[in-house]
Image (cartoon, rainbow, N blue to C red; front, side, top):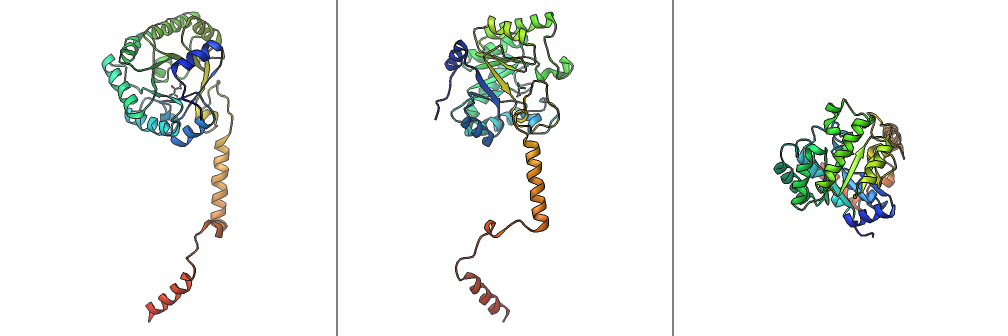
Amino acid sequence: MARKKTVLDFQKMRRNGDKIVFLTAYDHPTAMLEERAGVDMILVGDSVGMCLLGYDSTIPVTMDDMVRHTQAVRRGAPNTFVIADMPFMSYQVSPEDAVVNAGRLIKETGADAVKLEGGQRVAEHVRAITDAGMLVMGHLGLTPQSAGQLGGFKAQARDAETALEIMKDARAVEEAGAFSILIEAIPPPVTRIISERSDIPILSIGAGANCAGQLLIVSDLLGIFQSFTPKFVKKYADLADDMVGAFEAYGEDVRKGSFPETQHTYGMASGEEDRLVELLKDDED
Ligand code: KIV
């Protein structure tokens, strides 16, 4: 079994140009399978709210949700670097709040790091968490917790001014001590400049290949998430159709009585069926 990777391994992978494979997971079986497949890093994203819990944004996700799902992922992938997302309003109010909630995630779940959204405006909060001895991943570009301010789930940094602002954000978060930054839905030329100007691994979701590694949402990759499919998603399976097919086949079998078959049932111990007939007879007398 492969040893769990550390920040030093990720730094080395970046230096050597070995791409970091990063994927979300929200539950125990998926985490187990991702570890088996050799995924380098798992994000327990607050996307759990949309992918698993049926919300139409990440805003309602709570600290308790994140703790429960990160614990399940940790149990499933004990030898993989796991990052727990900090949910909306768990770090924005004050650096103190940010430290307390990051501490809870790390302490109660066994996660290796936390992730939070934002640049210059949360740099002080990132600094407070790293000063408390915890690892922080930044998240810039399309930041779903502020999708309202961004006008929806839209690509970012498509004009030079916004691109420059995101570069300043990346600098601020790196200087505040983040070990890595995830950038979402920005054009590859901007990703390349951020990556070249940083000394930490820059990871992309929908931000092109000019960086240290790639993240996808597992429900998108597997073709389970049905509400919408962002442009940057590549589906590696179509489990939604496979699942509906399996449910329909089961329904058909039950309705026509061809499930269960003998092989799906338990036999009585030898001679017990005859004894039961006798007991029933005695019972009737
Ligand atoms: O919650 C999440 O999965 C994320 C990704 C959208 C980057 O933050």
